Length: 162
Image 1: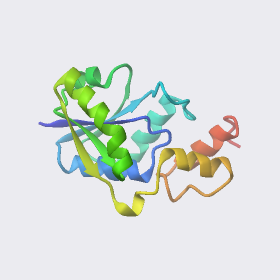
Image 2: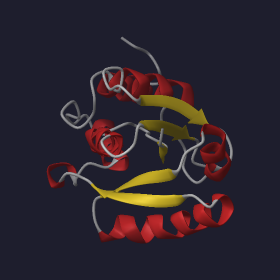
Image 3: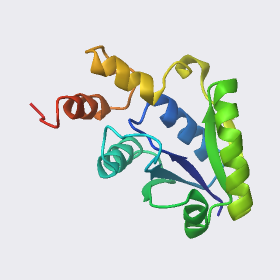
């Protein structure tokens, strides 16, 4: 059985992320969505909520599980027995940002990174843009899986659900 890790902060999870995970699942027997804390970014949603939202989004996809990543991705990859890391690319800027991380992960773990070109219809969707649109009251429901838009709006309101 081949396992791949599809890591990210998923703050919030978008339809672009879902597309990449589903594509990865078509190539590997199992995909572990690794929800990471990004030390260089302040998160809108706590990691536990991001994990719960991702589990709900992939509940109907056999062979996909969601776990929190604490620490180095290279260590997590070894722990789950993954043979690859899968990252989605929307364009050249994504490749430029992902290449050094892929090289470092290979250096630390020996595991290769597989780049998957995302659906062009979703290429404009980035978590940071989703948060910006939501911050100013814009519609985001068609950019994220069910339940995520309300979680983002609640977090922006200060956590109240009403």
